[in-house]
Length: 109
Length: 112
Image (cartoon, rainbow over all chains, first blue to last red; front, side, top):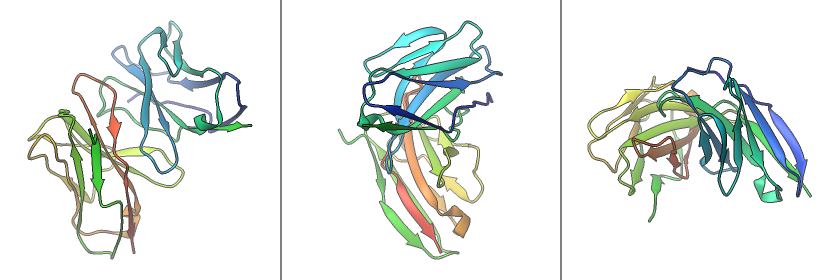
């Protein structure tokens, strides 16, 4: 199982771009990288997934360098409602992916 | 559609008692999962089921059992609850070809 390391917490201000980096040095060839968002008292919600290079959807972008030993979730122009915990998961199937402690993002006005 | 429902929303249980947490999904997903989340920690996988009729152990399976008699339901049973099982329990499901898991609202369980 690939272990992931993320910052425990981050602060930002409304309108800023936020980048959360996850380290996964022992990622395997078949592993994908998946990010989830969790609000208090709710279950996690899928944000984005990728294998290499860059993936973008309506919510976020995911940047993965060529060696795939890290990944960066980019949230453009955050708002107060983006305050949440963000989890980085690595694995080749959902049974083997592990949620770490995540990164607690606080967006300030 | 309702997605995933869990019941009860919360429960206080005496140690030594048994309890079944219910989880139902209406998305016809093949795979279902049970997680527990403890204060300040991420989610830990308890058990999973890749398809109806099969189950597997996750990261923290001890003290819990599951069954998957059909596609929609995936109950989690605590045969003899202990205080360390106090936690928030989340059920999730996914299509077998996808990494995207859909989570229920959770059940907050307190074992005294």
